[in-house]
Length: 185
Image (cartoon, rainbow, N blue to C red; front, side, top):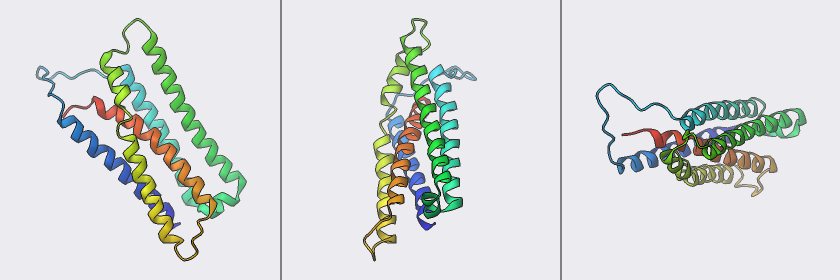
């Protein structure tokens, strides 16, 4: 179960790396001057991304909690638990797919629900995804090498966990990139 703790640490490091990158990137943007007491209203893209991030984050945390509760080895050997976790993660991916289909539909409409700023943010939202995934992969590699250094053989169920953690890191970092791009320093 010690490796599961490393997963949480990896996700924290990936999230921190994404946050640091976005803060650095925002510092390079010109300041937006608004009249006192006024704020920019949330765009459709921003609202959809926020709700999707909340849903995907909840489902990912639920799947991780189930794995932590049962342990990786028991999770892998019990078909019901493994299938439940896989279905939860597939539902999270389906939610992400619905998000992008909705945004594509909004983008293709002529009533300006998605403007140029939204398109630029959408196109640049993946800027921190690679760094977040590399951080998660690095933590996984360090944890697994240290845990199985004596035998040199990593159980296959950890490879499955590495796969899902990278997929969900990609989704969460992409959605977080959209939301963070709207924030102004």
